[in-house]
Figure 1 (tube, rainbow, N blue to C red):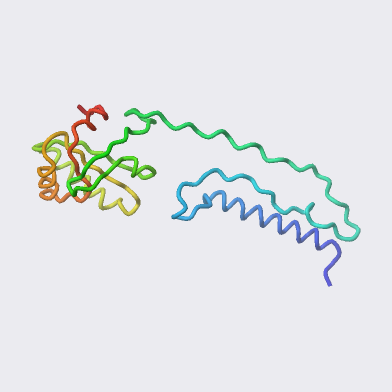
Figure 2 (figure 1 turned 90 degrees about the horizontal axis):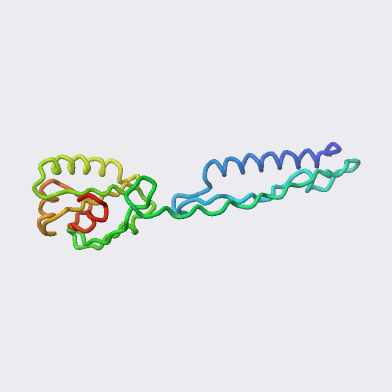
Length: 182
């Protein structure tokens, strides 16, 4: 037989454990790897001791309940540009593999856009270092896109093969202008 008032005690334990689970869920982001970006979590009512029927001889909880505050207004999209804090201008390119590639297709992932020039000795060194970084970090979601400032797509493909580049390469002088590289 349970002691008197155990319903109220059990309700308090349930409320405390619900609060702990809610806090852990909030801190963990409450998202599975496939669920996409997390959004702010709205407060939901938890079971409290006042929700349970009072035990014999217990006085009901008359504590005033707080209503959740309204959600903050959504953050506006950043402007498009090349400055820190701005969204990078979109581009649509054909890669050396004859695949279509748009920056907007890669949104939500870290993307390193690299501009290079055929016949540039320092580009060969730099692109080799970027390939190493790409191989180390692509499992974590890093995307690298190499855009040649000039030349033919076939020449860019030959260059990438000679240097051992596995990330997408393309040729598009207009993207370099949009990004204020030239």
